[in-house]
Amino acid sequence: MRHQVKGFQFNLRLPLVNKTPLMDLDELLPSSPKLECMHLGLNRAEVRLPRTAVFTSLKYLTLEFVELAAGSGHLLARLSSSMCCPSLQKLSMMYINFECAWTKELVLDAGELLELSMEAVDDMELLELTTPKLLYLKINECGDLKSLTVSAPGLKELTYSPNRGLIHGPLPCVWRLKIDLITQKGEDDNDDDDENSSNICLLKRCSSSLRCLLVHLYVPWVEERHIDLIKNNIPQLPNVTSLLVSIDVECQRHSFGDGVASLLARFKNLKYLSLKLDDSPYMGFKTDEYDSEDDEAFNFTCNHSDNWESSNIALANLREADFRGMTGTGCELRFLQFVLASATDLQSVTVSFNLYFIEEVQDSRMHYFVHTLLGDGTWTARENEDRDFDKLYKCSKFSKLYKWTPSP
Image 1 (tube, helix red, strand yellow):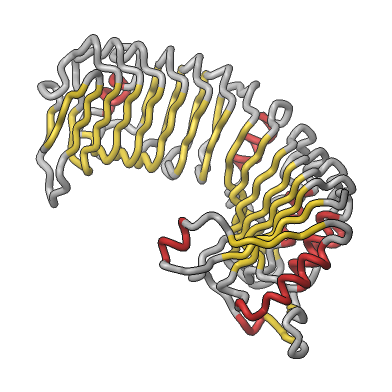
Image 2 (cartoon, helix red, strand yellow; image 1 turned 60 degrees about the horizontal axis):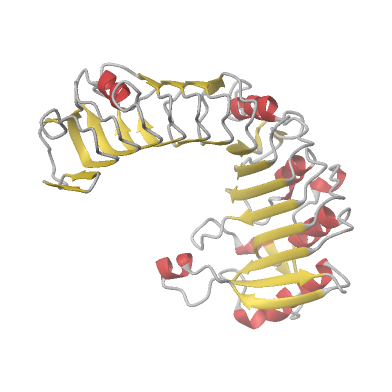
């Protein structure tokens, strides 16, 4: 065990062992009138948090890898609220386990809190926030959460992904929202099994204030006839000007158009659009879905039906578009042409290609793709500047990027 106090900061990290005994932090964390920053990284230790300590100056608190000791759930609420930390402004909780806490509810009353982030908090079913100054809220991978009650009238940015619990309380000022949506389900699936329902309710409640929407769009495998979960359920969002969609395709990778088209039809005033296909080289992929008609590199077609042709997409206000992870197929080209057909005042278009699915010798296909996509204007090519993925998989090249600007 190692801990140190430096200035007005406190860091506590426990070594990772197979079985960590119960830790009582009453002695390790005495009251302090000067402590401003606290980081507790406890490596899944079974922990009882302080019962009586008060940290009047604490502004930044991070808790990670904490297994709450039996009957100590209320101590987490106390540590995170104004009773213990009246000056707390930023709170982060990661990998917290409520299994032995004797409660599945967390109630936070934090009058000065501006930012709250929760990730992978297990066995927490109810969360109640009384945070009148809260501006940023992130609830990520809290899969057991069934109900979130928020009293935060000034909340501006909300991430709620990939959770299904309902959110209660007014949200009049949320202008940036990140959620998950599923495009379809099988016709024989349970009618009550709609994983979009809580996020659709959230979209409806934020529709008047929302300006920027980030969507992780999941396209599941459905063998036969399917039901569109987007087209008739997502509300019109006329005030959204920026849409970023990350597309996770379980079936044919290039067959993303149907669900995306249903989503795009809900927006009429977009100025910025980003579509990003999952770029993992290890995702499912069937080469026999492609049919090369001859030896020309750009003749690379597929038999996917263009079911999106009837979608009502109108993007007359679009100024900037960004399409990432393309493979250069004919249906991708037709779909992007369809999306951009109504965009008459474009200022910039970026297209990147996944080189795991396009051999470098087929540069002519990428060249054909981009120059067919848009007419008058100038295309410039460069290597993708984001090398994080390349470093992870020790790849020399991952994607090639082309950028279009209109002619003067």
